[in-house]
Each structure stands twice: as structure tokens, then as C-alpha cells.
Amino acid sequence: MNGQNLPPLNWLRAFEASARHLSFTGAARELNMTQSAVSQQIKSLEQSLGLPLFVRQTRVLLLTEAGESYLPIIQDAFERLQSGTLSLTGGDRGQRLTLQCNMSFSVFWLTPRMNRLFDRYPWLTVNVVPELWTNSTEPSASLLIRFGRDVARDTDAKLLSQGNYYPVCSPGVAENADWHKDRLFDCSGITCSWNGWLGDQGKALPESQSVNLASTYSISINAAVHGAGLAMGHDVLVQDLIAQGRLVKPFAHEAPMQEAYYLMQPARHSQTPSSRAFIDWLKEEFS
Image 1 (cartoon, rainbow, N blue to C red):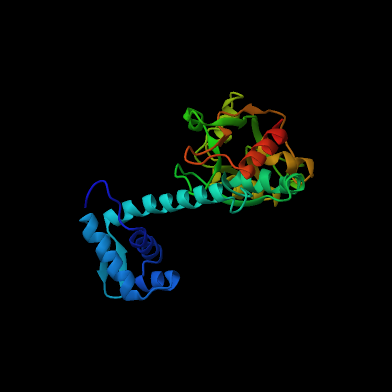
Image 2: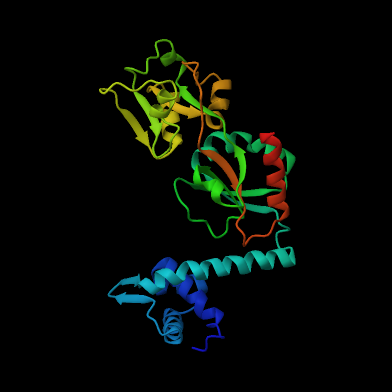
């Protein structure tokens, strides 16, 4: 293949659909083509690239290592073509926002405030793509909200909030709360933990005490809301639940967080009316 030439767009569409479905038949149905036509376009693409993209087995279609590497490149290219075309033609007038967002932030902070967002911008449509612990970016996401210590190393990251953390529990548990013996819950993989909170006071958990861990605050904080024990929380996630009386702070001490929430915009996405509106609203909410 001439290095200055690209494969025909219809070959790439056939590859992307086949890789997503892991089926030439499924791709043919989606593209309104025959199965044999899709198969022939894939063969032409493989010959053009000089690499096999699929392993063809009886009733099973698998991606080769080259195919797995090529797929996200093609999907990203299609997404950029789509968003660029819409931006050029005003196809959706920039009204749709795809937001890749920390899972717990989405559940405890964003969704309780969405009524205010839509009251302010009733024309806005939001697609939320939640994430746990990942450095991968959804190709269609025009804005990201991430949580961690190392996010600040990205020069495009803008700090949203970095407050304090402390134990929380339901009002019923708070009456006799005792971290020495109560059931404890926390989110794994972060420094604002039970050990961190106690260490900030020169204390430590008893050797007999263990902590129940989850990969998201959505689980540990909900466990506390429903009276299962004490959970470690922080300002952004628990302030509404405390204000509603669903959670209380059984102990006075608060420790400063090392992790924080950051807003980011992937370099490949230009700002649209929807992203500008969301950023303006977010800044106002955090101010």
C-alpha cells in the first residue's frame, strides 16, 4: 500500500462494524450489505494493509493483535469525522455533550444537581459515561471529570475540588458509633482512607479490625446510608446526604485530602455550545 494513500472509507466501515459485532453477518445487517460483500471488503483491506485483521474460525470471528490495535484508531477517526462534520454543518447545533465522569461524582454530586443544569440550559442533552479507575478516554467524550492524585500532572487538568475526608454513617449508627469495633467501609486504592484519617490523629486501627473495600464510593457510602456501618467519605460526595439527614458525621476530626476532582477536555475536541455551557455551570456550582 502506498504510504500516502488511505484505504477506502467503505472498507474501514466494514472493518469497524465487523470488529464491533465480531460477525460479518452482523456487520452486513447494520450496513445494509450482503455478508459476502462485507467479507470481500475485509479481505481487500487486509491485502491493502498486508496484515490479517481477523482470525476466521467455524462460527467464530476473532480479532488478531493487529485488528485489536487498529480498531480504536478507526473508531476514534470516525468519531472525529462525525463531530467535525456536525460542528461544520451545525447538525445538532452543539447541543449534545458526552461527559466521561468519575462514577461516584456522577452519582452523588452531578445527578442531584442536573435539574439546575437543565433549568439553566433546557436545550442541552447530556450523555454521561461513568468510569472507575481508568486512564482510557471514551473517543466521543468532549469533557472529562476525574479523581486522583496524579491527574494534576496533565497540563490540561483544572482543579474542581479538594476538600476534607472523614467518617460518615446513618443517624441510627451514629448514636453509638465506635471505629474500634463497628463495621468499616471504604473505597480501595486511595490515600484518604481509614488508615490515613487515623494516622492524621496519631492513631491506628486495632489489629483485629478489618475494613470492607469496594472499587467505588458508590458502594461504600451507600452501605453507610443503609446502616451497615461507618464509611469514609469526603465533602463533594457526602455533603448533600448530610444536609438531607441521611448521613451524619459521628466524629469531629477532618483530614485534608490528597486526591482531588479535575475537569479536563481532550485535545482533539474543540469547544461547543454544550461544553461551554457545562463548564460555565460547573464553575458556578463550585464557586
